[in-house]
Length: 210
Image 1 (tube, rainbow, N blue to C red):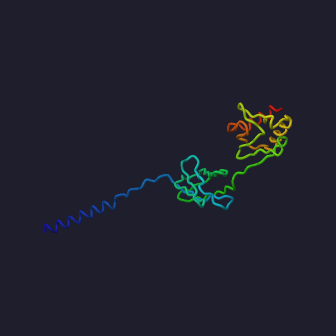
Image 2 (cartoon, rainbow, N blue to C red):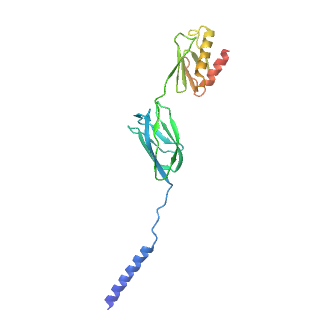
Image 3 (cartoon, one colour):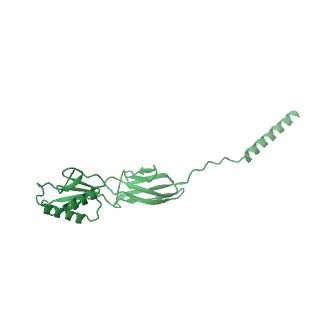
């Protein structure tokens, strides 16, 4: 009789414990900030893949580099509007605004449209057949100008013995440049102007020539 009572008590105890576990609330995993993913491809002129281009999300440390086929993936991107920038040596960088949705992949493809070009500008009145060259905001003037004592000046007399011809060549250069932004002027004598002062120093030279 005692044995039967103990057995019944054990069964009841197990049922009570099992019921307690069944009714206990399950722990809820803490939820982090909602994120999405950005993926895409970087090409040149819509055809050839651009490998090893840097794709970054501005204002963050997130980014990726394209593989040999121009593909990239950035995971864990916060939901909302972000700015994504792609850059590679020899190409103009490009920035876009992208909307990121929770749990979804946003496809963003970039077409860099070709490399930067060198523009050759003839300089009439200077040595016959002379050109200056413009590349990525830098004007390579050769012997058309010199940089000395912190300012640009006309070329030495050995290259330009005629002051009127020198003035005409530089005035023509200004007209051909138009509104082009000149960050630096690099000369054949004296090196380059400080970055960001190229246009101002060139305008100063033209003002001194009268």
